[in-house]
Length: 68
Image (cartoon, rainbow, N blue to C red; front, side, top):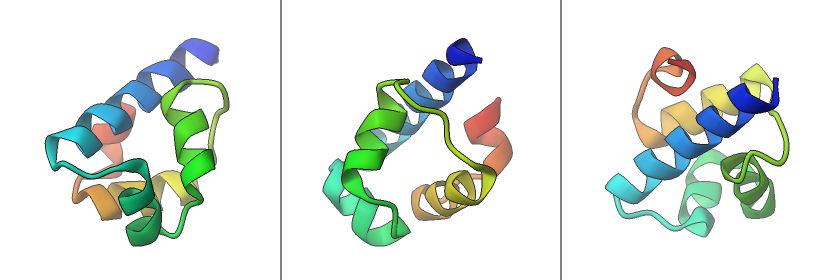
């Protein structure tokens, strides 16, 4: 499972950087704490589907894109 967490986290970080958002900016848009986003991006923790949906909406991508 840790491998999946890392790949999702890397994808979130990549997409966030592509639209030039900081973790703090993404946190404001998504309502997810920026420290939590940092841990997700680092692959230190997994996250629940509702949180992934909020991040996907904030990044303007599909949930499937985050999980692919």
